[in-house]
Image (cartoon, rainbow, N blue to C red; front, side, top):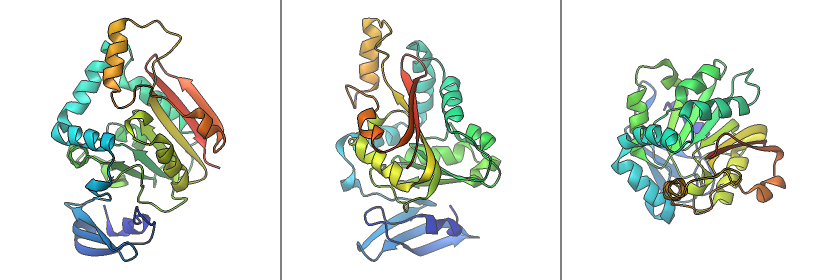
Length: 273
């Protein structure tokens, strides 16, 4: 992340501006802190990653997910690659094709936020479809996955367009009306309070911005063997009934669509008011 990117970040507690205190190398952040005078809190920046959450602020599910991913960051992609076809959920390529089309017209430079960017599996496809001059911002609570993301794509041209931040989706460290597109792949069930996370997405989305959510949801119209139902429950251990709160959303967004990709995933997309 560069010094020029810092005005995009704000204190996740009060949304006020931050003051940089630290070192940089040719404009690239190294180590230091982002200080909030209002909250009297300093957010650490280590090895170029702003850490915009405090451990005590993480809720139970989010903390477990972070610990799991930090402990076994390299197991995430292989596990997903094996699990999807084994459980009859298709392949990652189909998921990406669904959300890429749902992002809507991409005809001018824009700023996109991916919530739960992980190791950056979607970065090559996003860079391919986004217009030149676009910015990609990615957040995750797992610094292990963020470090893997940076090392995995080291040398790729699109890495310069990606800004990686350790942050909690319940308290996004961005000002109101910041992003033209917001993407989340994985499922709202992984968050302790999905409505608060959705509210934060809408807060940082510019009016008319497209929001795309690829969520886990077992198809009720498809017969599922018992072992598949059990595997799905294990896979989504953080929420016994994962899905999209369409009733909550319907009164707050525009042009809401929720389409099934396969028997394990749906793709919801809508516009911020």
